[in-house]
Length: 258
Image 1 (cartoon, rainbow, N blue to C red):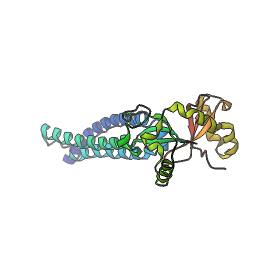
Image 2: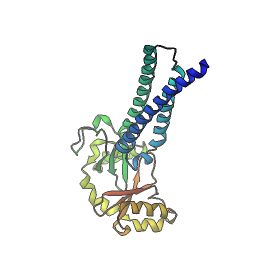
Image 3: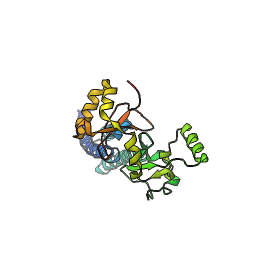
Image 4: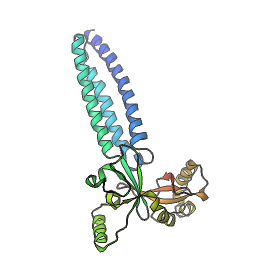
């Protein structure tokens, strides 16, 4: 009976802890998926699995510790001390995980000659962030800045660009190469292709593309596309309206032939 009474007591407190943890989880989910990693970036960058693993560990471990430590024989002061320590550990673990996700947030969307490239904050050369031509003094805390990229003008710049490319470093990761977004529009206009061409070339992805087109609210004949890439994936396309604004996206390879 004593064990049952203790278990019942612990379950009550663990249940309350689960409810509180669920509220924190919902707030964290909104912070990550709507503020730091809005669509399509959370899918492109694979943040979902990392976030839900972090959340599962945090939400489960806190109430589990409460279930283990809660005991009616303890004084009110002892119980609050236990719960406070559990809460501090839980908050610190969650804060560390969210901070890590914040460091890897999407920050720059660059037109890189024949594609759109999303660059995360931890991929950008931090010491030269202020050395850009768009007036950006520091990376935004959240949100994505659209930029064009300068082209190498001298032999040394060409060799450096090739060397960086072989090392896996894109010019989009180097702030001194950033140019105002409007300067990319002429080249984007030349490179962007009709969505109808992609539908004809990728019939196996027709259902995915049609769903993405419907989401834009625009007819297919008014849409064009460019490959949308990141350091983690090359198999996406951005759907563009007549003003070359990204109005949709789809997990379809915009480069390869069928």
